[in-house]
Structures are given as C-alpha cells and as structure tokens.
Image (cartoon, rainbow over all chains, first blue to last red; front, top):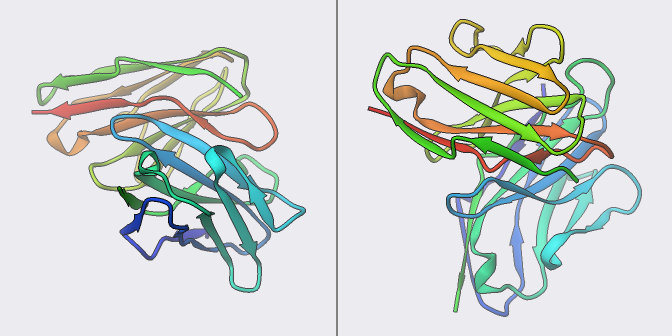
Length: 117
Length: 113
C-alpha cells in the first residue's frame, strides 16, 4: 500500500523568505510524485510532478521540489514566498505499475501555508 | 492539459434526498475518477468511472450509495444517494489526459442538512 505524510498542518513564513513544505512517501516500488495547491473555495491545481530524471523538478508559480529517494521525500520549495502563495498544499503519490489501479493517487492530509506580509 | 467543469458548484440538500453531480471535460479522456474531500480532510478516491462498463469502487464506497455513469469519454455523473449530514463534502472529478498528469475539476461543495 502507498501512503503520504505531510508532517506539518500549517507553515507560516514571512513574505520574501524561502518556504519549504515537507512531504515523505511510502510505496513498494518506484513512485510518481505530485504537488497540488488548493485555494479557498477552489479545486485542486497541479503544481509539479516527478516521474523520472532530474531530482529537482520545477513547476508553476516559481515552485520546485526535490525528489530524495534515500529519504523518501519530495519537499516543496520556493526561494521567495508571496502573500498570494497562501493556500492549502497537497502532496500525492502513485506507484509506478500497470493495471487498472495504476492511476490511483494517494494524497497527504495537506499543509496550510500562510505567507505573512 | 484538460479543462474540467462540474455542475452544480455547490448545493444544500435535505437528508434522505439524492444529488447528481455532472463532470464535463473538454477533450476525450480514458481515465476519469471521482474523489471526496471531507471538511478539513484530504482527498479520498471514491471510484474510477469506466466508459461503457460499471465503475470500479474503492473500499468503503458502494454503487448503491454512489452510482456513477460514464456514457462517453468526455462526461460522467456521480450521484450521492439517500444523503445524510456525513455526506457533506467537496466532490471532485479528475482526469488523466496524458503524460501522467492528473487534473481536477473545481469541485462540488455539498452540504446536507
């Protein structure tokens, strides 16, 4: 079974400072990893994904994430936070395999990011 | 990418009634899913909507409670039947058009009184 842990319910950061939202995962094989953002009263928006290749993945709105296989982590980062980045962030994992369930995503519980002006 | 719309965007329903949520995609997609996001919680997969056959339900979800239709590759419906307050959630449609990216609709916010 696959699982995702987001150890922080909330992250507070000052505008202009770097931000990190943590994510660790567990799968029996190789993972596909994703980050999504949810603004208030909105659906989920795709930010970035790791499938294969470079461990550092760049995504939308200046976000990036680093895949670390030894630590089974996929932390989301941004060099300089904006107030508009304040939202709920979800990490998700899917195990790489074929079959009917191959597209099932398992989500973390979410981390609320608050960027303080 | 895929543009996904859902109807209704929100609704307030009485206990014991049913609500059908529609999901429309702007392109043909093979894989379509329905998720539930309970208040303050993460997303949980309800089922995979299969075109031309019965949906595949995850553990804890049954067809009698959440019947799903998938008449073609751009459209699906999810019905929440015999609703109770515990069904109050956001229901999201999701698709995987290509390149392993999974996109989500804006969600339907359901409140059951």
